[in-house]
Amino acid sequence: MKPKIFNKLKTPSHLFWADILLIAIPMLIWASAFSLRPSFIKPKCAINPSSCVKENVFFLDQITLGKEIEEADGLSFWSQNLSGAFSVCLILFWAFFLFFSKIISLKASCIQFFIDSLLILQATIWNGALNEICRLIIQRPRPFVYSDPSQSGLDIAHYTSFYSGHTSFAAVSTVTAILCLMGRKFHPILLKLSFIISFYLIFFTGFFRVFSGRHFITDVVAAAIAGTVIAFSVVLLHKKPTA
Image 1 (cartoon, one colour):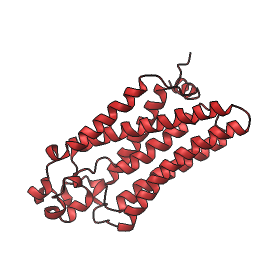
Image 2 (cartoon, rainbow, N blue to C red):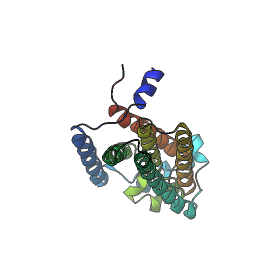
Image 3 (spheres, one colour):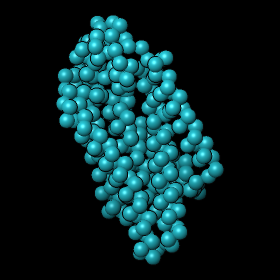
Image 4 (cartoon, rainbow, N blue to C red):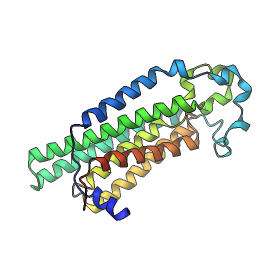
């Protein structure tokens, strides 16, 4: 099974007409789910503060309570945005490297960049839609709510801890870019280096989200897994079948 998937990843990505729907549908789901927050999310910690105490938190996540470093919140935005920039720059660099190396034409390099950037966009939108659905269903309070459930628990936006949007974006954007490039004759050394950079971008985004008090450990771990799975799913869907 693994060799077949690996061989499939080594084929170029392609688009099809259904991609219009594969972008429009998750956008609609994402927007609809977000608009339903006031109707679905209940401020349970403000209603019943005794339900939001440390003892009710998963034991692994209890160690994150009380860690509310404001600077870490800002750093998480930087690492998240850097992940997106890294992904776009990576596919742009390789598309035009192939052109300047006279391996492909200018038209082919532009098409390559367009396809890969569209797949990053598509994977990101699917991640956003699934992320919002999970938040509506689970309604997990953010860690900082436990410090003052009566006041912090009044805002419904504070019940969107699971799973981390920042971390999942870092994962889905960087992994999608790398998987796309696996079918673009991407240099093996650059591929390994890109995986290392991607790992650290995902790790530090999750790290900063935890230490800012915005997410639990399980929130960022689930986010990294979700983003990676979505990236694989979207890219594999656009790879040509192998024998």
